[in-house]
Length: 254
Ligand code: ADP
Ligand code: MG
Image 1 (tube, rainbow, N blue to C red):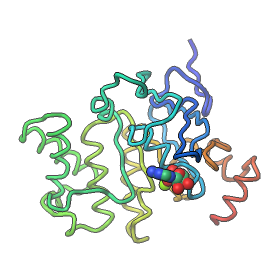
Image 2 (cartoon, rainbow, N blue to C red; image 1 turned 135 degrees about the vertical axis):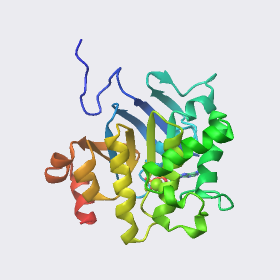
Image 3 (cartoon, rainbow, N blue to C red; image 1 turned 180 degrees about the horizontal axis):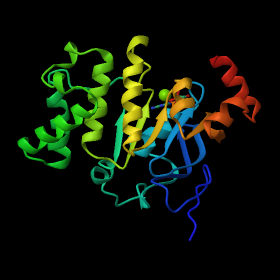
Image 4 (cartoon, rainbow, N blue to C red; image 1 turned 180 degrees about the vertical axis):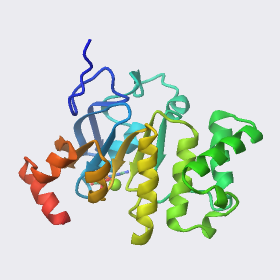
């Protein structure tokens, strides 16, 4: 048996599959039939103008938004449709937002252990051990007792990454994880993301960090107007974009 690894092609082996995903807000269509398949260990980068539906697509993946039609599968298991245990499914999908979304009244450790205790029902001791390991993996073991307000934006985002990682998800979704950061703090977060990738995590990343996409992405997807316009490996995507809309977008980003 040969395993299909066609970029964006249908594949039974995909870790995350979006099939013919449609979503409207009121009468306005925002996702117009998205087909996207992320393979195990792959880092797929999503680029596109503001309002093109990138966040809505990610939010549909853990059902923060309810798609109107289409299907989402994680490791072959259907995430959409009735009768799905959402909490169980959400454990398999880690999400990192632009705004970190940490609890301000909890330390870094407290933020990570809360997720472990609530979601995985670990004991305090187990949760603290796992949380410490996760904080270590993002280079913050010496900041475990600090509160969000005592941490830089980059450190806060690394705590948020540790919180998602600690649950050992099958896939991690990132929605503009460095957009809220001062420029000098962006690099640390990108370094952590690359380490997460190097450890084999499957990642779907919405970001405008073009240089990082060139260096670290396995595939780049360009979205516009609620549809995937073009996709390919980063070297080809950036040097020889095929579609006029892609070229126009890239020239604006330079
Ligand atoms: P992107 O992340 O690419 O900037 P979004 O997915 O956030 O795009 O938004 C796509 C479109 O959907 C935009 O026109 C936005 O205004 C609209 N939209 C997003 N969320 C909602 C919502 N909850 N209610 C109504 N319209 C929304
Ligand atoms: Mg967005």
